[in-house]
Amino acid sequence: MAAAPSPAPPRILLAGDAHGRLHQLFKRVKSVNQSTGPFHALLCVGQFFPPEAAEGDSPPGDVADYLEGRAAVPIPTYFTGDYGPTAPRLLSKAAADARGFNPGGIEICPNLFWLRGSALFNLHGLSVAYLSGRKGLGGPGCYSQDDVDALRALAEEPGIVDLFLTNEWPAGVVDGADTSKVPPQVLDPQGYDPVVAELVAEIKPRYHIAGTKGIFYAREPYVNDSSPHVTRFIGLANVGNKEKQKFIHAISPTPASTMSSADIHARPPNATLSPYAAPAKSVHVEDTPKRPAESTDLQYWRYDVKRQRQGQTDGSLLCFKYTSSGSCPRGSKCNFRHDEEAREHCQRNVCFDFLNKGKCERGPECRYAHSLTEEAAAMDAKPRSERRRVESSCWFCLSSPDVESHLVISIGDGYYCALAKGPLVPDHVLVIPVEHFPTTIAMPVEPEAELRRYKDSLGKYFEKRGKAAVYFEWVSQQSRHANLQAVPVPLSKAANVKKIFHLAAQRLGFEFSVVNPDGDANQGRELLRSQYDGKSGLFYVELPDGTLLLHIIDSGEKFPAQFGREVLAGLLSMADRADWRNCKLSKEEEVKMVDDFKQGFREFDPAE
Image (cartoon, rainbow, N blue to C red; front, top):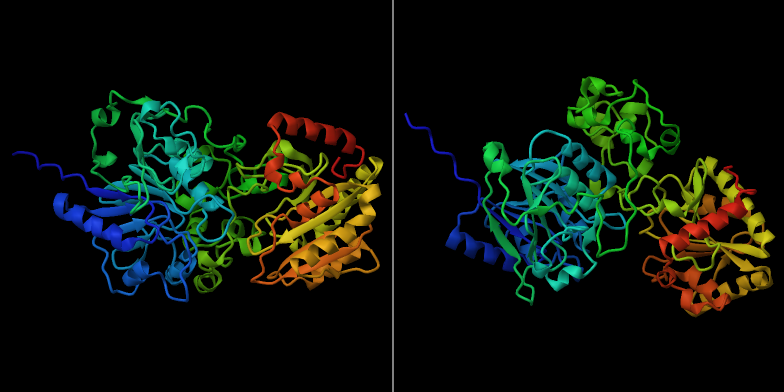
C-alpha cells in the first residue's frame, strides 16, 4: 500500500510597514491571493499603524473601516508593529479584554491578530517566534526586558524555529554578505537593533523577517554556529512606498518538524558564514556595549545588583526557566528549585518575584499579579498597556545590554555615579538610581540618604578644584530612568547661576518658584518629594548656594529636553556644546576621563 502523500507546505505572505495603509495592503493581498494563492496567512512586520496621530477622536480611516466592520480582512493576518501615535488607543480595548497568555495573537477584529510582547506559536505546522515592538524609550510599542528574556529561554528549548518576526533589523546582518547585492539604503544607520542581533544569533531561525528600513533586501543564506540549518534574512519595504520597493513577499517553507535530516542539513551554494559568529556587532551603527557574560545560575537575579556582585545562588530559590516555561535544560544540575505549583501560579500571570521572594520590588513597573488566589490575581493583574515597561535598551539600567559600563565611576547600594555621555565639561557627572525609577524624587526614603552622601562627596571633590556643583533634573511623562545631572562651574561664576536660570525662564515665558528660600538643599528636596504627585512633568535646579528652583510643566507645554544644559552652556560661554551629541568622545577618551576622575574622587567616594 502506497504511503500517503505529505501535505503541501503552508503558503505565507510577508509584508513590511503598513503605516495604516490597510486598504492598499489588503487590496494587494486579495490580488495576489486570487492570482497565485490561496495563502494561509499574512505576517506583517514594522509599523502597522499610521505614523501620525489622527485628528479628533476617531481612528484613522483605513484602520477604522476594519475595526468597525465596514471592511473585511481577506486572510488571517498577524502583526507585530504595535507602535505609532494612534496604536495605544486602538489597541487599548483588545489589551484590556485579553486574559492570560495569547502567544498566537489577540484578535482585534475578524482575521486580524495582534502579536503582543514575544512568544512562540504554531502556524499551520510552522514554528513562529516574534518580538513585538521596537527598541525605544519605554511605553506602548516598545519591547521589554521580559519579552527579550522569554525569547532567550525559548532559544534553549529543543526544536528549530521556522520563522522569527521582528520590526527592526539585526545589527551586523550584512556582515559577510555580497556587497554588490547590498542596496545603498541599507547603509542608513536607522532601524538596526543590537538586541535583535543577539536574539537571532541565539534562536537561529530558518527565516528572519524584519521591516522599518523602507527597503527590500534578501540576504544570502548564512550558516548557523552549532546548528545544521541555514538562515535566510528578508527585509521588507513600506506598503505603498514611492520607490516601488517590494513590500510583500511570498514564501512556502516546509515545517522543520517534518523535514528529513538531509533537507535540514542542505546548504545552498551561495551560503555565507554567520554574520553573528562573533558577538553581535554592526559597522553601520555606533558600537553598543554588549551584555556582560552572565552565569546561567544568576538567571532572573541579574536585576539584583547586590546578588550579582556577591555571586550568590541558593537552592531554595525558584528556577525562572522552569517556572516560566515548564522545562529547564540544566535538569537535575540546576541550582534552583523546580516547583510545579509555582509553575501553575506563573501560568495564571502571577509575578515571579512575588512567588520567589514573597514580595515584588518593581511596584508599578511590574505588569503581573501579586496574589495566589485566582480571584485576587485576576483583579490584581492589569493590562500590559497600562503598565510601564522596563526596557532592555535603557541606557542607565546596569543589567541592560546598552549600559556603557566604562563610564561608571562609583556604585553604591541605591545610587551610582557615571560620567555623562557627551559631557558639557570634563567633570560632568550623572547620579543615577540603581533601580529603574523615572525620577529621583519618587525614590524610596532609604536611598535618599545615600544620594545626600554622593552630593556631599561631589561637592568636596569640586570644591578642591575651585568649582561648585549645579544639579538639575527634568521629569516628563517620557522619563524612564532618572538621572540627576551634576555640572561643576567655576566658583567665580557660581553667583551668576541663579540669574541666568531666571533669565532663561523668562525667555520661555515662565517663572521659577523657589522651593526653599533658606537655601537648605536637603530640606528643599524633602519639600519637593512631599509635594510631587507622581504625574506632573517638572524641571528643578539646585543652585550652588543650595536653593532649589522649580517649574511645573503643563501637559501641553513644549519644554526643551536639554534646557538645563543649554543654560549652563550659555553661562560658561560654550554655546556649541549645548547639545550632548556635539560633544561625543571616543571610548578611549571616555575611559581616560573616567580614570582621571576616579583618581581624584577616590578620597571622597562614599562607596569606597
